[in-house]
Every structure is written in structure tokens, then in C-alpha cells.
Image (cartoon, rainbow, N blue to C red; front, side, top):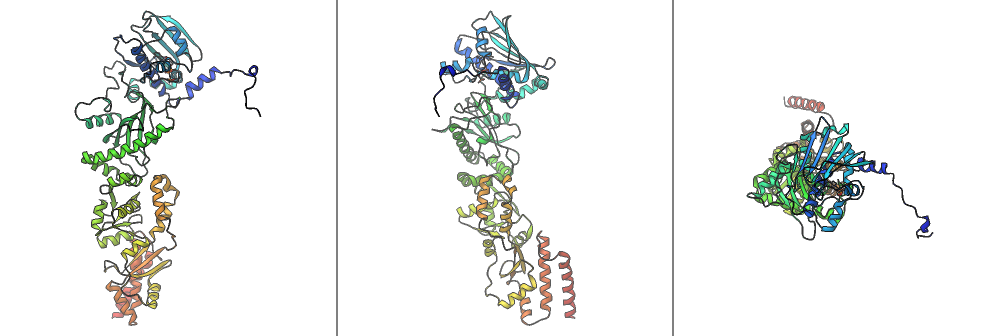
Length: 613
Ligand SMILES: Nc1ncnc2c1ncn2[C@@H]1O[C@H](COP(=O)(O)OP(=O)(O)OP(=O)(O)O)[C@@H](O)[C@H]1O
């Protein structure tokens, strides 16, 4: 088949259904009607830049004022910029896809100009039934023109009184459903966010204070305390949480040009909470309000603002192209978070303590995803244990050089055993605790005792000095162990504890981690690590019953059995009941039920009492 073009006389021009196109562009390009406000303020800003370039002698103070009249359901955006001549209205304002702004930027190289696509003005029709633009060009200060359109498809232009000074007023007669925008408080809130980085003051109503008067700490030479200025900005900008600390984003050599500010948000986070909140600005205008994907997945506690002129917006100017600049910024932001946390730990110890307390759980997971972060956090981050939050170092010291971790979901026999041993036990079932402690143990070369795992059990339950004869083990197993329980003669502390039933926690953990729900709660990097640890578990053994040969009670039982004492079976029954009661108290389960165990104790006591009589 020929790949060439058809003969010229066969070429046709694509028809445009203007009405359909205008409707799509005006109504469907943007995700929220608020974008119209942003586009119109941005046009006002560009018009000021144009004025400065074309009319450098002008002494007019650049300002943008937005007014609302709820009774008339109107919003007016006024500027003291360049204004438009009548031909310019036709050629730029009323021509879809063409704007003066882009040409001016190409011509002058001025990077402050924001407009690019020649589409933004159309967004006015997404919120307004009628749009009226009254304008006076700085080139013809004695003339005024009024553009009027309903829907954007057709428009009229007529002469009118010139404005008191060159500039433009865009009046939106709001659609009923968007009438709530004609409210100056609402406008203040929206514009305060959209325009926070615009260099031109933006006023709402008759206010004398612009909505964008918070000093931008990475732009101005801040007098005095830079950290305090960063905190002020973060506090003014953050929507949901107060900042605990703030740190800068700086351009990376050969990477991104982005600058801005990140902060650690107050407010608890858990493994499951993603409060990442990042706004991205391009040439001073808000581009992406929720660009959380630029922040690392483990940084659920970070909020921030960045601006970059290398990022490319989509035509709606609400999202960013995922290009190499986007990826460079992602990397720079991950580095900035880690650098910022280092800086906080070094310079702001009080804030650092609050961050550790608030976001300890998240940080455990974060440490697993970034080596530098692990180094920073290893000795500081709190680990939840049976004795409250402790650092890994404190856990190790209290465990006489070993980290003790329970793999069960809290309570259970582990807690009882550890209480008897008087060491704190880390809650290995909590988000990221187990992989964090394993990594810690590996790097710091210390022992980790994971109770419930084969390895951990071997550490805790030592082999007996001499193995028991097979016949005695068989008798004990028959007397004490239930279905699916394996009797293991051992020695362990404290000697007062005759036996312990240990469910196979690795098998339990494996089942839990393989559960689909875990995917939703745990960031994938941490989950992969956890799975790597449980992959080797086969999960066939349900529980092991460790019998403490160091316990005087067990020794007496064996002596009685060897001597053929009739009471040995009764005493064994007593121990079996004790096992079941302990398992039930610890939230676990042994064979049989609690009522039977309690009854067993009664029977044993009666039998022993009578046999002694
Ligand atoms: N307030 C204003 N003052 C002066 N000229 C304006 C004003 N608003 C719009 N214009 C003119 O109309 C043109 C078209 O505006 P429009 O918002 O559609 O596109 P743009 O700003 O050029 O690009 P983008 O679609 O990227 O916003 C602008 O380029 C500018 O020349």
C-alpha cells in the first residue's frame, strides 16, 4: 500500500464544529469551575507583564482586584495592565488557540509570562452564562471597548467609555449552579492559594491587604530568622495540619530547577495514612494542587510547595507531563525530605522529638525504603513494645544485648513469657517493626529473638543438658500435648514456668502478610521486604509445647513417673490444665476448652488430696 499523500486535488480541510469545540474546551477541559478564576487572574497577571515590557515608562501601580456581588451573581476580575485594542480583541481574546502572550514570550524571552495555549479565557464560560470584558489599551487610552458573549461561540464588540486608566475588567455573570462563587470570603480562600506566589498583589473586594502578602521564604531575602519565615509560610499555606518543621527544596545540579518548601505536617500518620500534600507552581501560578505523586510514597507526613519552570503543564494546566523533568523533581524531592529530616535532627531537637513521636510508625517504614533515612532514624525512632515506645537501642539494652520481638498480634503467651523474663518485647505485628528490627540487628550486629519463629524459639528454649529417653518423651507428649502440638523438652527462664505453648507465629504472619488487605495498608516497598522474610516459612507446624526441664515441678513430675508413683498422671493432668488456662488467658487457644481445663484442675486437686489422705 502506498504511504504517500493523496493527490492535492483530493486534500480537504478538516471542518470544526465550533459550538461543540467551545463546549468541550470551556466545560470539559477543567476538573473544577474554580480553574476559571485562576485562568482569568493569570491573564490579568500576563497583561501587567506585557504592559511593563511595552510601556516601561508607565507609573501605574500593577494590581489585580477581584470583586463579587452575590445579589447580581457576578464576579469581576480587574487589572491595570496593557488592555486590548479592538483588533486585538478579535485576534487574541476571541480566537481560540491563539494568544498574544505566547508570541510575546517567544519574542522577548520573558519567562514571567504564563499563558501559552490561547485557551484559558474560554474557561470563563464554564462558570458564566455571560462574559463581559471592558478594556482600554495603553496604546489608545482614550478609547474603550466592550466584548460580550453568551457561551463563547458568538460575541459582539462595541465602543464604550474608556476605563479610568488602561486595563481590563472581566465580568462573569455566573451560572446559577456556580452562584456560590460570588462570595468574597470564598474567593479569598481560593485565590489565597492560587496566587500565593504571584509577584503582583491580588486584592479581593475593597480589602487593603492582598491575599498574597505572605513573604515567600525562598524568594525574598528574609530579614531575621529564616526558619521562622519558613514556618510562617507553611502555616499559612497548609490546609489541614500545622507544620512541625519546614525545610527548603533547592535546585539540584544537572537535575531539576525546582525551588520551594517542604514541611512535616502535624497530625498522626499510620502505615495506612497518606497525607502527602504538594502544590506545584509554574511561573507563580498554581498548576497542580495535589501533586502528591511527586513525593516519595513513604513520606505520608509531608506537605509542600514547589515551583519549577521546566515542568510542562497539560493543556488544562491542572496536571504535569510525566517527562524527565518530572522524574528529576521526584528524585530531588526525596533527597530534600531526607536532607530536611537530617537538618531537623541536628538543628531543631524539640521539633525532631515531636516528629518521632507523631510519625514514628511511618518513619519505621520510611527507614526501610531509604538507606540514608535508616542511618538517621536507626537509634532515634520509637519502636512500639510491651513497655511502651522504646528506641531499638533501649530495647537492646533491656534485652541484655538482644532485641526481643513478638510476631503475634499483641497479648498472647509471648507477653506473659517476656513479663516473666522481665524484658520489653517489640510488637512485631505492627507496621514495619519486624523488618526494621531485623535490619537494625543486621547492621548493628546484635541478636534478634523472634519469639514464635523457629530461630527465635531456639534462642529462648535451649536444649536440655541431657536428652530425655524416648519413652519418657512419648509419655509426656501423650499426657500434655494436644492435637497438632509438638512436645519439645527444653530449658528456659524463668524456672518457675513449667511449660509454654508457642503457636507458630511465622506461619500466622505469613498468612497475614499474604492477605490481600495488607497490600492496601502497607507501602509496597515495605511489604516486599516483609514478604522476603516470610517466604521461607512452610507453615505446617501449628504450635510447639516447650516443657521446662529446669523447672522443679517438671523434675518432680519426672521423678514421680520414674518411680511409678500413681500421682504422676494426676500431676500431668494438672499441668495440662495449666497450659490450657495460660493459652486462653493469653488470647491463644490450646486443644480442648477452658471449662474442661478448670474442671481438670478440680479433679486433680481432689485426687491429690485424697491420695495424700
Ligand atoms: N485581562 C487581559 N488583558 C489583556 N489581554 C488579555 C486579557 N485576557 C486575555 N487577554 C488576551 O487574550 C489572549 C487569549 O487568552 P487566553 O486566556 O485564552 O490564552 P492565553 O492566556 O494566551 O493562554 P492559556 O490558554 O495558556 O492561558 C491572551 O493571550 C491575551 O493576549
